[in-house]
Image (cartoon, rainbow, N blue to C red; front, top):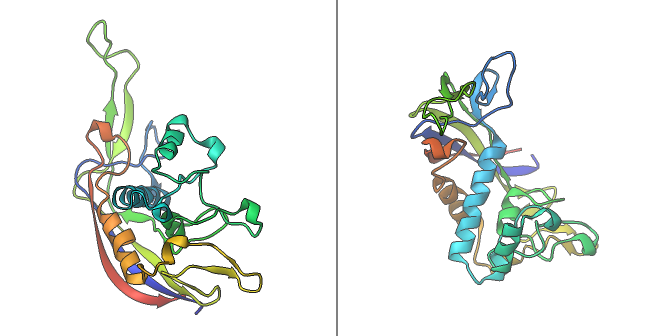
Length: 256
């Protein structure tokens, strides 16, 4: 019983055809299958986590513009960022230097951990939120796409490609967990973290030091509202796919 965890039931409802694609399986005969685990359609945790992080970033940029402590990072090494991403940093929308990171060596440690990385994890440092896989008991539909020959106006030869899709009105479900207190580490959600008390090393969660935030406000503003703000997910968005609605219901407090 080293952790106190708040659990939330997450239900994602597809509002139009939906797909998150998987690697092609030669045996299936489908060029673009959907992602499945154990025969069930699934939205992997990495996809939902990425959408949640993007929602948090948009919130931070729009609501806390000019507040350097609330500025999100771009979670990647600076030398891997695109020129367009570097322009966003130059415009002051994201932290300079690439993604947040933690190391006992101060030369390799970020000056501060941004709110998104505090919750979802930074390089060398875990976060407070465990984003789940969402499962649905749904049968995928098989569709196909073609390319039109610009000269003749008819379907180009050998351009028919099969793909799978999930219908609208399908529910994907999973349980999101938020660590409220880690007894072993001494971490409490809403408080700046101490990594090594003897050495006085902390994660420098500077955005928490003014006392404005606590566990309840963080969960409401950064998790529940930001998940509900996700309205598009998955692939083929330009083809009329991807609208979703996410609902969240508190489950229970667990000990882990």
